[in-house]
Figure 1 (tube, rainbow, N blue to C red):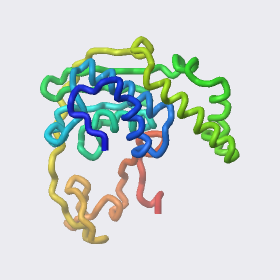
Figure 2 (figure 1 turned 135 degrees about the vertical axis):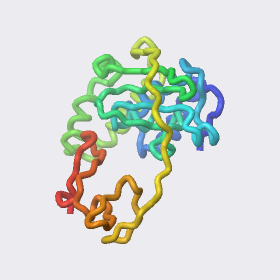
Figure 3 (figure 1 turned 60 degrees about the vertical axis):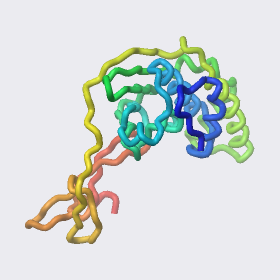
Figure 4 (figure 1 turned 45 degrees about the horizontal axis):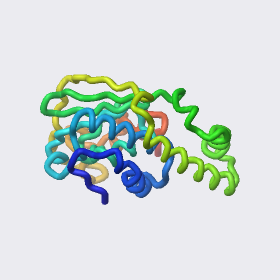
Length: 232
């Protein structure tokens, strides 16, 4: 695993991309954009990748505005992940990262406009992407060709000029650290669930699923509300 505890140098970008390949499953332009945006934000903020103590303390927060490949590039580069409670997801659908120091709540927001990126793609890439990814109709040969184009384009994205990004100094309202909740056993399925996800019916505890209570899920199009009876 790649661990960078010191200020991350831009020369490490391709090394991080290889780690991202393992984490994300493939290399693509938006994974690389997540890496590039992270390096810009980290160097603007003068912070390194989260190490053990920093991740336990949630000392740096990455606030992302999209649930796309871009976000995996950010998780790999910054060490801020959903699981260590240092990644916050805002369902805004924008290719943007805000990196924040918890000590001061000062941060840097880095945004990239997709229309600015068109000139960095090979001419045939958009049509091939639509056929292979959007329409799911590509042949094995077309899929392989797209993979090759994506690798080439991703490596270019790693070194985009800072001028292509909108970079802003920001200060955000304080965000609480992740609280620790007790677990309570559901009286129907017998499984433990976080106390905040338990509902009482006739004084008996039920998890949201057994109570058929609405809950939220992150899927491809963003955050949606689900009723359990809709997914059985």
